[in-house]
Structures are given as structure tokens and as C-alpha cells.
Image (cartoon, rainbow, N blue to C red; front, side, top):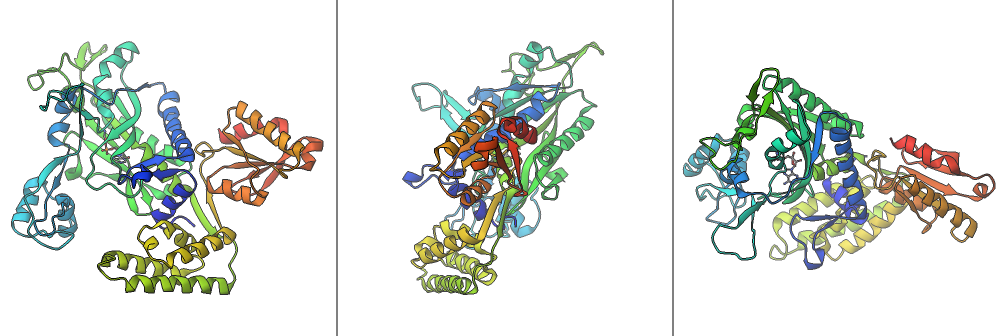
Length: 545
Ligand code: GAP
């Protein structure tokens, strides 16, 4: 069963060392996350798979790692200083600050035609504050999303040292177009790929790592002759879709959405979003845009740009003239892709029905939790929070024992944890889940944080331990991510590895001591085969490539 809520993914991610809330010892910093030991492996594997596919496996691509801090003029001429903003309005009644375009879409059922139409609707009292319902809203003003910082030891108080943390990696590739072209002796079409951090002071971050203020992008700028742009664009749309599918993402959870004319950025001729069916609904995973010659022209010396030192153009040998190439930009998020692969891989099922009386007892506990929530004074708990908790608990109670995983996922909920009886619900749910459910991450073997785990059948049998440790070391030497574990019974160790997506587990038993064979268990089919210890490296490498 796939995750029915993002909370199930968040709960597993925290429990099993994929992602932790950042700065938790000081109460955290809203919507910032740290990748833990398994999360960093998974995200690195996603980035590695992307790099291999778009740089190493192709003949028309080069890599780049540009600086995060760039000359402020880059952001002036890219248009970010003037236009990279969200329109915000202030509610004079409840002092909240919603995004005016979101309010417009929610209340009018369509996108606004710019700030002017939003402000006309606000002036006509047609829009209401989504929090308190008041129509007393201020005129919407653009709020720039770029993080500002100061370069240099002295903050002079003016803007002379002003720099921005880059809000996209793309500009680093545009301004290096000439360097890559010249040093690598490239001919059109060719592209530049880059992975790196980007920062945006998002007004509404959320949905776990889906939208954060600090994130990583995996972007490509692919330069083509004007006239060849449309075919190249379509080829990239197809190639990028196939990349996700080749790494195990289910096709039915992935779709291409053509942006409508009014959604297109001012520089884009066409843009197709690859969307994934996240537990919270279809949402953007990657945007693939035809940016025409906008960016190379914007950073070239011209009457509009007297600050640039030269022109970013290409000498076409055939036509014996300079041209400005068009750019196709497949722009993906490393964090979003990692989250999508996690969601897609997640599978939780009830392997054994708990006894009827155990389920009844748990349901009664959930009902007493609901009663405690309902009794809470509105001063102690916001009515909206009460409503949310009661609705979630009611839905779960009705579907027990099948909804056990959702109940376990709710165990971290900060509001639920303020209710005393919740501790009992949590304890009982976790005990039942431990014995009756199986969680598996069906990650593609190339993405899995650990490729193979090696166990001795008995940890107090030195010969089994020694052989298991030696097999693990040989697998490491063969370039595989291998770990050794003897901290539980074999069944429990399998379950732990299933939960973090390890595709293969090896058990060293007494037969191994005699014939040098071991059992290799497959995570997805749970089938086991006996293989010679000496052939493990080659066999497993073959399976994951
Ligand atoms: N250079 C084009 C560009 O940056 P974008 O649609 O703003 O386009 C591209 O961003 C991708 O970067 C998105 O599809 C998403 O995967 C990722 N991304 C953007 N903002 C993000 C955020 N706040 N948190 C996480 N990922 C984000």
C-alpha cells in the first residue's frame, strides 16, 4: 500500500535516519531539514544517477560547478532583481500576510492577469483574507525572494557590498557559456549541466522537503541553433521523463503538463512541467523550458546592458556569421526528486491481522483520545487544530487495523502529543505495527542508500562472524555500499533493511563454513538463492547496473 499521507514518509524519514528537522536542539528553524546518514546516501545517488545520465552517458554535454555568490549585476540583467518576487497583501484585521495571487486563484477560480488585476479585485473588496475573512486588505506589493548578504569585512550600511545567494544555478551556466565553448572546443548543439544549492526566501515553504528556502537544483542549459530549438526541447522532455521511469518511478505517478500561455515566464516560448503524484497531489518535479535567446542576449553588451564586457554568441562556421543560440533548460530539484523517489518506493502492508481484541482495545484508545481533544478549551487548543486531529483520528479508528501505518505516522504530530492519552495510543500502535506490518522501500538498487547488508546467523559463533565480516569487506572493495549487522534475529534484521530499501541481504550460516556458499535474499520477491561467496561482488554488481 503506498503512503496515503506525507506524514508517513516524514515519520519513516525521521525514524530511520533519512531526514531530520534542522537545528532541533534549539526548537528547529521552520521548513529547514538536514539529511541524515541514509538520506545523504540516497540524495547523492539521485545526483550521481542524474550526472551520469546527462553528462557521462552523452557526447554533447559538459559539467560545471559555479560559485553561489556572483556579481550582483548578474541578477540585475537576468531580471531577478526586478521581477523575482511574489505579490503579498496584508490583512489589516488579523495582521496575516497571504500571497495575493494565491488568494485570487482560490477565490476567483482562475489565474490573475498580473498585479493590476489583483489590486483591482482588492480595491473592489472582491477578495477576502483566507484566515479571518476580512476584505480589509492592503494593496499587493512584490516581495523579492532573493536572500541578501554582504560581501567584505565592513558593512558600510549602503548597498555597495550587496550580493545575493543565488536563487537558481542557471545563471552560472549562462555567464560561463563562452568559457565552456572556447575551452572545450564545442560545436552546437551542446549543453552545460550543474548541480548545486539555491536559496529562495519562499513565503510559503512546506510539505516536508518539497518546498524549502535552501535546496539543491540539477539544471541543464542546452544550446542549439534557432530553428532547431523545438525538436531539441521535445527530445529533452522525453529523455527527462524516461530518466525517472528508468530509475523505477511508476509511469502512472508521473505526467507532463504543458504550461498555458499566461503561466509562461516572460522569456519562455514553451514550458512543460514534469509532475509527480505526491501524497498531497500532483506537483511540479521539474520544469523543461525553451528560454529562446533571452539569457545569452541579456548578459551581452548592448545599449540595454552597458555593464557586460562582451557578447555571448557563437560563430557559425557554415553560415560564416555570429548567432545567439537558443537555450533549452531542463531544471530539476534534487530534493524534490529524492522525495518523489521515496514516496514512490514506499510500501506499507499488514502482513498479519492482529487479534480482534487487540484492534478493539486500540480503537477504544483512539476514541478516548478524540474525546480528550474535543474537551480541550479553545484557549488551550486552536479549534482548527482540534478539528484536524479529531477528523484524522476518526478516519483512522474506522479503518483499523488497515490504518495502523497512518496511526504510527501521526505519532510525531506535535499537537497530538500535547494530549496525555496520546502516549498510550502511540505505544499500543507502535507495538502492534512492529508485529503485524511490513514497511518496504522498493528503491531502485542504484538509488538505495545501502546495496547489501551481511549478517551472521549467530552473533556468538566467531567463525560465522569472521566470515560475514570478511564478505562485507570484500563487497566494499568491489565498490558496493555494504554494511555488517548482528544486532538482532535474522527476521528482524531483514525487516530493518527492507524499511530503508536495501535490495539484498546476505546471511552466513553453518553450511557457509563447509561449502563457502551464502544465502542472498531479494528485498522485493523475498526469495533466497545460494551463491558462492567468491562470486557475490560480480553477481551483485551485475544486478544493480
Ligand atoms: N532555472 C529555472 C528554475 O529555477 P524553477 O521552476 O523555479 O526553475 C526548478 O525551479 C526546479 O527547482 C523545480 O522544478 C523544483 O524541482 C526545484 N525547486 C524550485 N524551488 C524550490 C524550493 N523552494 N524547494 C525545493 N525545490 C525547489
